[in-house]
Length: 599
Image 1 (spheres, rainbow, N blue to C red):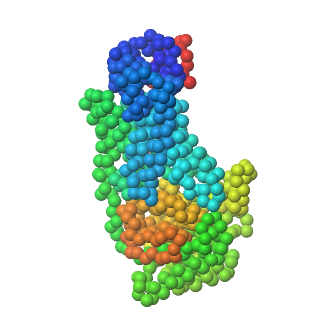
Image 2: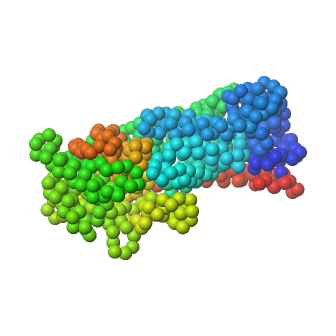
């Protein structure tokens, strides 16, 4: 096997074979030996090795090559002797930069309006992965994931300590490590930003589905609610939006790398195109974003009743939580009667606003019924239903002021380790908090669209907003408005509520629907179909928001296409992996028998 194939597979090269010597002579200036796929262009050198220096570029070298732009890289290019200090910098530069790149991506997420940091974070990740073999790509991707997800998901430690947070962040970082491995594999192909961006989307698709049903939190798309790329959500959903950000970031690194190597004009133009194309596509997609009232308007109200205290014990005073929401609804009715606010057509309470089952507890039924009769319009109530046998139900109840409860929707995406406890006995070894979930919740099966005073209001309960299929199926079932009743009291004053609010804004644009976000303790909001927040509450404050919202029934391309854009991008990623495999097979055959197999 040629030395180039050995390096691409991640092995230290044996003595150069005849095939390797031929490859080097044909494609590498001044005798420089490069890894597989680089000799074809004569410009594709790993960071820190200027073309024509005669340096050996190996993806599998024991010491990591210095990242482009670092002092170690400059010293190597100038032919400076490798001192112990310089070798130490070279060895640790990439891991440190990978962690920093992850932290930079975290900084691009709400509540900070720094969405534009995301492409730069991925450009830095691309520099770390450039020229690396597969297992190094996994390690660097894992470090990137830790730098990103540890701060992003720190809210999961609220009330239960660091073990669940560290376990979740580590598991998700391992999946991002697989993404880094994939990016390293396709990193030697022509048009590498395209393949790398498709692999990134494949990694997000994996995280959205496995394990335990997936955890899509932290998709690139969810950090772009204020960004230039946002209109692409209406065209191809969150997969296309994530792809555009990734392509821009990987393309940015490639453009800088190619420019540094003094390339041909064609190569420079193609590299620049990977940055310009997603920006141009986002600008072209702007007409898809509209908040016009196709089906008239409705006056909607969301109630934030607040909770007695934050944390996992907030529901120890379940009756107080219910009373808070009933009281705030009655107060809204008084404000309407006094002319201080317009009368709403319907009202939405948060998830868990009544953790007392009104079908089995008459006093809870009476409290809700009196509040609904006071406001005199249909109200969606978030409750927990406790059947005599089987799992609990996280349910939204449609409550009519005359007829009482008339319809229900059971939450379909049940949060693992929150609403259900997989591997209970095993998890108990690490945390006694597992027993807070005494009885698992069970998932519903059908999307829920309530007819509320003639408006189709689709229920997407809290955690479900992170899942593409849950939101889309609700819109396809006839929702003219999306309601995302949520309970963030568990997570205190953390950034979780802002991260979820950004998701809701993405969903508004993706499906061109107004989104109502009633939350027990904040931040509640009213979002227009263009992603604009028109009203919002403060945290841990009892409040009611009343706003006139447009009703819409037209479907965006994202709603019609559903998972098709994601499938196309997955096919591109698979094509890249297939190309890498075919090149290795051809190189192995060309090398002939007796060549060590690649690992």
